[in-house]
Image (cartoon, rainbow, N blue to C red; front, top):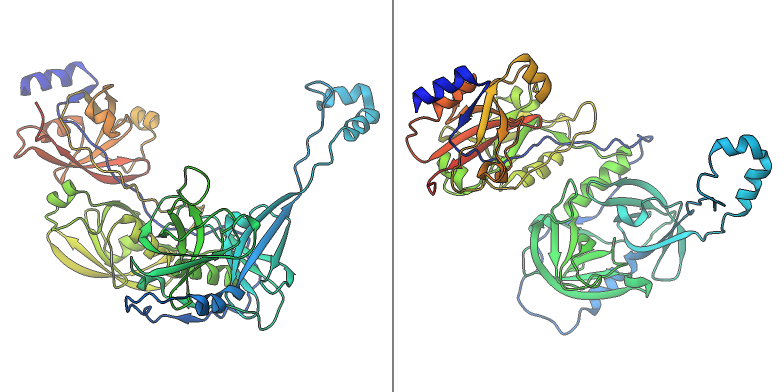
Length: 505
């Protein structure tokens, strides 16, 4: 085997590894919204009642007192926008300036007369008044693209709403109406809710008027819509089109979430609805009101979830935590002493269950704030102090790839080569990345199905650095067991991959 590999090195520009290389990983950092900054205003004064909800397991005969308390603060949001008009052309291409050279202004006038008088585009949703001076929480998708926003209260009053700010990354928007002593709702600490708690959903489904439905919290921490920051509350309380931006309240009548979306095959309620938790919405709102944009914390790490195979390799009892695959040079994490291979167990005093949760926790920290980070390194724990900062430069987003390593049969067919200058240019590999570059992966191989692709760079094998292709081959020979821990650079950062050959052959 060794003689064959050495011959291959002399005769070919790349080496073929016998081990299947499986990819699983993620990236992280956290971002700011680059909306235009506005003048500073007085911070919004929200009423927060953070006591746990009463859990006496006694279902009363009526929720009428709670509805009377909550309903006045839930509003109907009606939006309108100018339609995008297109000229009705006598034949394709008549909007070309070439024709105007011959037909002149008369041509333009004829074309304008042919444009239809399209009606304004109208939309409808819900919102929740959260301060007595008229700040309203709703969804970004309710008001996105609107030229005019009208807010209708339960008592029949109507106001013109101003869009204070929007955050597409969480689907939160903040409106403001001019009023005094408006009916508003107190917020609860959404971190204290539990699966099984009774909830009420209040909104304006299908534009028929204010409607209340009852259900319970079915799950927490859901990520289903593909937003950058998701931590949805799932409920079986009926939510339908028009409920977007409405209130999800607990049994004490406190706001715990903003109703946002449903999963449905029919377009109507099927018992799976989602609400943005109040703590997340509150952070976004306070930032939008104070700064006119959302400022999020930045840690400067690439992270991934801990899979069962990674947990075994790092001697973890469970799969909790977020594994650091790479650390951004001169970033907050590197300055604090965090390293590749560390597993973040706690951040700012709260346990970390996975990469997505860590991303959310970092995002909530204000720039320049120092927080403790507890990590597992080489089998022992240590706590470091990290000063979080605002993400510099262009917009970046913390992503968490929750895909798992595919444990399966190890196959040949992965070709690697040295990182010479030409290869770096062709594969777009930075000069500071050293290892063996993947040049080819056979179609139909386990490595291809797992996501390994040309351009990926093998940095480490079983925690041993890889200098070049020959080094990679040597480190895969005579393995001590049938699992191999790899560190791979891909898409601007590194991540850990476990190759399990226990079922091979």
